[in-house]
Image (cartoon, rainbow, N blue to C red; front, side, top):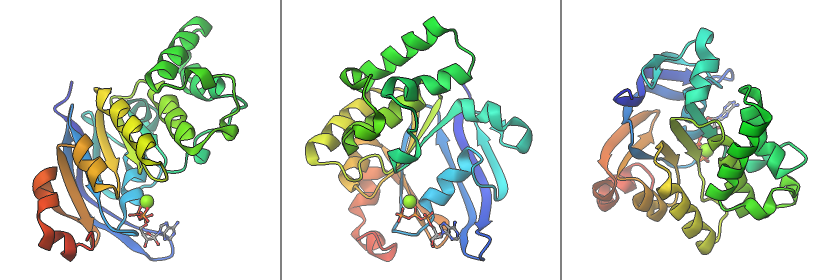
Length: 235
Ligand SMILES: Nc1ncnc2c1ncn2[C@@H]1O[C@H](COP(=O)(O)OP(=O)(O)OP(=O)(O)O)[C@@H](O)[C@H]1O
Ligand SMILES: [Mg+2]
C-alpha cells in the first residue's frame, strides 16, 4: 500500500460567487491513520472533503493512494476513496436498505452472488442486518447514518472520509458508531465538531481556519491547547 493515503498540496478554491474557501491547503494522511479535521462552522471542511473525490475542483495537487486525481481517472480514484455525506438522505435513494448497499457493488460489475455476500457483510459490520428490507427513508437518523456508511464501505474503499458522522446522534448512538468505526481498519479522515469523538477515534488531528491548515499533530495535544482552540474559534 502507498505510504500516503491522502496527499494535498497547495489546494485553493473559491465558489463561483467569489467566496474564497481554501487558500493553499496542504496536508497528508498516512495509510492506516485516523485523522480528524476540525474547524468552526463555515471554515471549509465540507468544501475540502468534496475535493478529495473530485466533486469540487480547485487548483493544486491531490493524490489518493499515490494516484494523482485528474479528470481522466475520477472513476479509479472514486473506487479508492469513499465519501460519507453529513446528511444520509443525500446518499440513500433506493427502495430498500439492501438495494442502497448493493448499488455500488452492482455498478462495479460484481456478480449477483458476490453482491449479496458483500451486502450481507456490510449489513453485519454496521449492525443493520435486521433493517435490510426496510425503506432507508423510514429509518431513524442513527440507523440511516450506519446504512450510509455501509453503502460506502460496500465499494471496499482504501480511504474512508466521513463528514460529521456523529452529528444528530444521541450518546448511545455516538458510542455505537464510535465502536463500529474503531473496528474498521481502513484509513479515515473524519470531520467532526465532537471533540470527544475526535479524540476517541483519531490519534491525529488538523485544524482548518482562514482557508488553511493552521495546526496539525496529535489529537490530545491539539485539544489540550486551549489558547489555540480559542484563536481558531473552536472554543
Ligand atoms: N455552493 C456554495 N456557493 C457559495 N459559497 C458556498 C457554497 N457552499 C459553501 N459555501 C461557503 O463556503 C464556506 C465553507 O463552507 P463549508 O460548508 O465547506 O464549511 P464547513 O466547515 O463544512 O461548515 P460546517 O461546520 O457548518 O459544516 C462558507 O462560507 C459557505 O458559506
Ligand atoms: Mg460542513
